[in-house]
Amino acid sequence: KNEVEQSPQNLTAQEGEFITINCSYSVGISALHWLQQHPGGGIVSLFMLSSGKKKHGRLIATINIQEKHSSLHITASHPRDSAVYICAARYNTNAGKSTFGDGTTLTVKP
Amino acid sequence: DVKVTQSSRYLVKRTGEKVFLECVQDMDHENMFWYRQDPGLGLRLIYFSYDVKMKEKGDIPEGYSVSREKKERFSLILESASTNQTSMYLCASSYYLTSGTSTDTQYFGPGTRLTVL
Image 1 (cartoon, chains in turn blue, orange):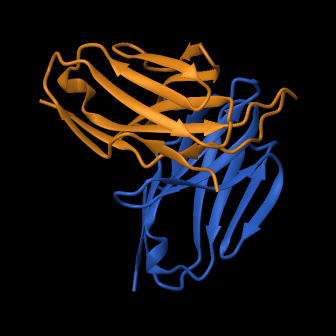
Image 2 (cartoon, one colour; image 1 turned 90 degrees about the vertical axis):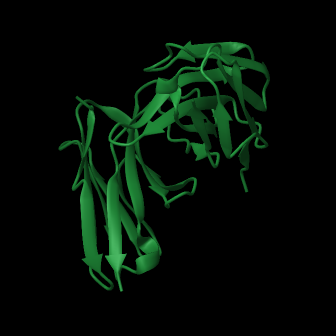
């Protein structure tokens, strides 16, 4: 059983919709990482956060340490947002090891 | 910009061959990682290294070895490739923080899609 769980596994939205992807983890972490992977492409780091909220353009990431839960929001979604979104939990260790969720496949239709 | 490069985007090898996957980063990062990514299984850590000549096993090290002779280069070796090692292999790097709370970002290479026939 993966220690990091994402939901939903697949998500289809219409252009312009507000999107939320959820990530839950089982034990205390030092940071949570959101990543984006386009079809056939490499992985891009979106956010690394350990508390509160971060915003970059139309992307917002939040984390609730007490509830062991993080969300990635996309406002005014666009077809170019179609990708796999992955969360990774960085545990309290200096070695930098992370546990990855299985990813959420987002398809935004025009 | 951080740049992590991998030696090949696509590679086809035969069962039993020795395979070398190379990864180079240009940001003087201490940490380097090798992952494989398979449908339905997500990203899984094979090995990582936090310094030259230092290595630690990840979650699925069986059938693999690694080499880190220089800080910028981390090699993944398949001693005798098998068909179940057909996968996408991703290399990543990050800074090493000694404070005890690591918030550094991992930077990924473009990946090598390895097919073992």
